[in-house]
Length: 493
Ligand code: FE
Ligand code: CA
Image (cartoon, rainbow, N blue to C red):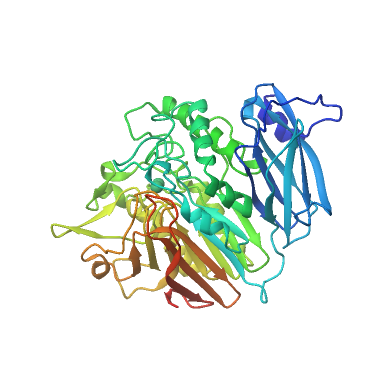
């Protein structure tokens, strides 16, 4: 039995009584704390020890009903192992639903910063709106994470991260601050990259303020990879070793449950999180199981390969899981936490329509299956939230994107990057909105989307910062869009 199977078989990495205490030279909690995947009675508490070298360290944790730790709700001890980079993922249960808790860790006489978290609610929230934010694409080299400073001051039930948490190599030429090294390939290199990102105080504050639900996109491993296929001409066996290193580091640094502990090049990330009967998050993984980008990737006119029924974005297993989950959902709002843009975007180049082959636009039949499903099964209020594309969009999802009068089957809110692409602006490419009538809003500002959800109304506020190339930007709401319960499609608030 290997270590992973052992842990899965016997549950927690709980420290045994009498575990020999370790003396530490300095505070090991420099990477901060986090919590994630909230359930009605529990949550995952995360930290990671830095700058230490024994084989294992016992880390104590406690979670309290108050920020001064007078009323301790639960406490325990976990082992931080060298082979997991001294990460701690403590799965706490037995808590009350829908309330705030505060938590901290101690090891070797040193204490972590205090984090705040919130368990999932069990009610519909009629009197108490559900608030969350979604984020993506935080290229450290492209700017300051000021958006996270503002996000941390919001009142949120949860933060959803839709991928590109790190960037594996340098992109673009306008570099505001530098990565610690060049392109990363090995586990230790990925760990160093995450450690750099997690050293950012604004990112740490956002993790310490709310529980997060996370799912990766491509840059957690490599730009535009697809399943076992690298963007370079690297044999799949070799690329899968790199993918294993990327997934391992991702797990080590994220507040994920043990069920998401990777096994070699595989990681289990598609999952459902429910908040009463108000909102279900169907969290997707559109990288690990997808077929290769058609037509040689990039921006292309639609070629035959993009229309092939064999094109898959989620893989058959995940696709079935999603449809089963949507069919059986009891929630008023059904969110698909998705990576790459699903609404069709035709960009005219010299009179020919072109499409990004890495988005759902390169997987036309797979998208048609999903749109047809939404049209026929009619799950309650489907809303897709998306990252990847470093710009803000609001779109109706159409049964047939080539026919503007076809039925609307859902709404997609695409959130911009935290920093990727650098300082943004409000300009719209010529013809974009005319050629794609289902698109209602676009800009390339930086920031995050804040959603306020009640049984009767969904509101998306596009929160933007005017610059990321230097610290200290203010935040404002650039636009707000609403979806009314039972009515498909978004409109301006
Ligand atoms: Fe990105
Ligand atoms: Ca991406």
